[in-house]
Length: 125
Image (cartoon, rainbow, N blue to C red; front, side, top):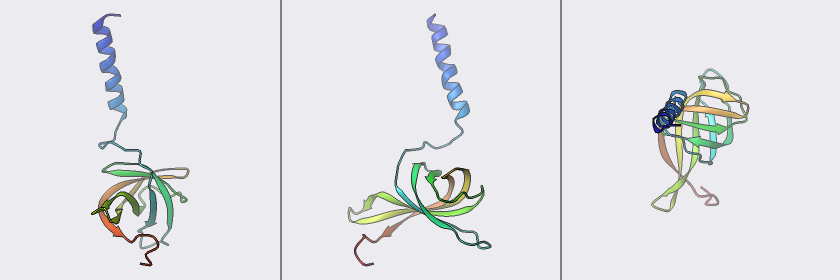
């Protein structure tokens, strides 16, 4: 095989990968505790717990006890691995819509987010 053929093959492999990858943001395999609740005012509020499977700046994939329909508005609170001033625990609180669901997993497109402080377990707060 010539060098030109190998180079062309390499470019085609990269083109195939980028053609099938539709995500705009890189995903990172981070496993953290997550709490979620639905935000639909016309229906019963559902809430649950799970674990993140991966996260990016625009979305999060997490385990769920509920099989929620695409378009459902959710708020998720993710225990963040960093602390504020090395003392205060943080939650990443994000709101968005379910974009995909499979058995036991939900994908959320993040539309807005903020970091909130949380009390340490056992502080009685």
